[in-house]
Amino acid sequence: MAFLEVKNLKKRFGDVSVLHGIDFSMEKGEVVAIIGSSGGGKTTFLRCLNFLERANFGTIDIDGAFHFDANVVYSNAQMRAMRLKMGLVFQSFNLFPQYTALENVYIPLQLRTKEKIRANVPFGLKRRAAYAEAQKENRKIAENILTEVGLAEKMGNYPCQLSGGQQQRVAIARALAQEPAILCFDEPTSALDPELTGEVLRVIKELKDQGRTMLVVTHEMDFARNVADRVVFFADGMIEEQGTPSEIFNNPKSAKTAAFLNHSAVNL
Amino acid sequence: MSLLKVTQTLFEGFGVTCQLFILTLAFSLPLGLLIAFGSMSKWKPFKRLNKYESKLIRIIANLRPISLIFRVIVWVIRGTPLMLQLCAIFYVPGIVFDVQLFGGANGRFTAALVAFVINYACYFSEIYRGGIEGIPRGQYEAAQVLGMTAGETFFTVILMQVVKRILAPISNEVITLVKDTSLARVIAVAEIFYINDMSFLNRGLIWPMFYIAVFFLVFVGVLTLFFGWCEKKLDYYKV
Ligand SMILES: Nc1ncnc2c1ncn2[C@@H]1O[C@H](COP(=O)(O)OP(=O)(O)O)[C@@H](O)[C@H]1O
Ligand SMILES: [Mg+2]
Image 1 (cartoon, each protein chain N blue to C red):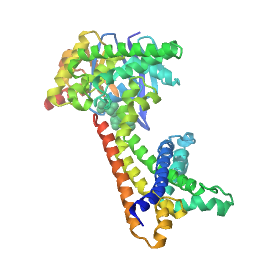
Image 2: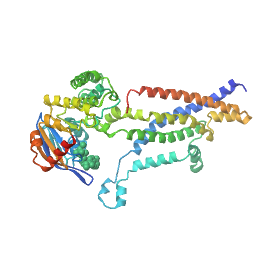
Image 3: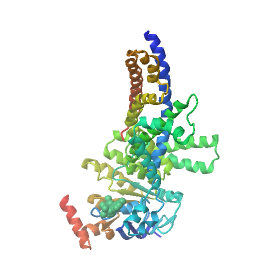
Image 4: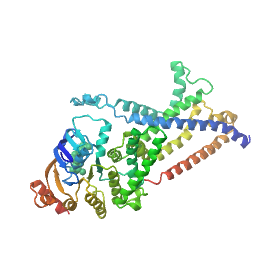
């Protein structure tokens, strides 16, 4: 079984069907770009993979360890465990404004460590000590990741003191800190000024070089062409076509894909 | 009548005013949060009827009874004069139901406190609700994908953002409360105006009534400084 295996995933909003049965799989270390015109269901697909939306039908298998079936009712704890397997970087960053860059990264991490400690260490001084120990470690982890995304100098800044590109890099660091099996990006540069998209795309490229498994919804055709291992074209809630970047960009088989690529080329 | 004597006498009443103010806040701030959660309740007991076509049945299916009850309460309390509520709470139990709920030495004060707490809790609840509902969905979703529980999300992510958003409207309401305490006069609570009426006004002494303004101005001045300081403290982030 593939690292990520999605079978016949369907999603409706009320009476409107948005995903009509997506079959999709990814291998470990693969970087997949999803392209397609807006309203095609790309965001909804990512949200279903991260369990922000509950699919109405189909299954999702992650890393051979987690199996989600839309017909099965899961406990909140099970849903949280599955969510942690997936990471998501939003178009609008969604950093927590009252925390510094460093706190944004280590506080969510610390909450998860605390949960583990609560399960294993009895209430009392020992637990307090374990929390303090974990806090030190988590800060260290957060510092390292922020350094990795080029924000060593900005750890103490609040989101309102950072540029859009820096905020998005903090958001990436925050998602990475949880060590997700697959990191998803929903148009990570669409909310940025053109001169700031480069720094974010560069970070994603570096993550690829480290062998991270990533699924990136993007309008940056150059990025899809040059960085992705595979490009998936979404149209009207279906995967219309997929293949290597050169197959999709140079030799699209479907007329819809060709029309979309022509159209984006004109707009560039 | 010397200024010192008048000041001393008025201070007695002002003590009661302050007690009413502090106790009202102590009870209505948390109670308001409960009412806010009640009015935001999403519980739909008849949700399953949603599959039927009929308009009426659909309305019933979408009914949120807890939310409805709380919103009606808030509407009634905010829609009627506080003076009326004071009288209702003090007189109605005795006259209509023949129970002496507010007898004894402190009865009047207790009745006023109850009326103020209910009234202000309703106003606070609307401020809380606005603050909570104004938090962008993305904040909840970011917390969710980071594996946070509902409780963790509220306490680590949402709460401080709400506090920042509601600080200004809450401070307005608190300052209004300082002056609203004088309404307790209508059920003869011994607050500052009542004391003034009994000690000075009924003897034809007018000026102490205007002197009372100084007490309120000082009190509100201190509160304004306090809220300004709070705002400064929360200035380091934007929501
Ligand atoms: N919460 C929602 N409720 C109703 N319709 C939705 C909701 N989210 C998305 N949709 C609809 O689903 C379709 C796909 O949207 P989306 O997944 O955002 O597409 P994309 O990201 O490819 O632009 C759109 O027609 C959109 O209006
Ligand atoms: Mg989208």
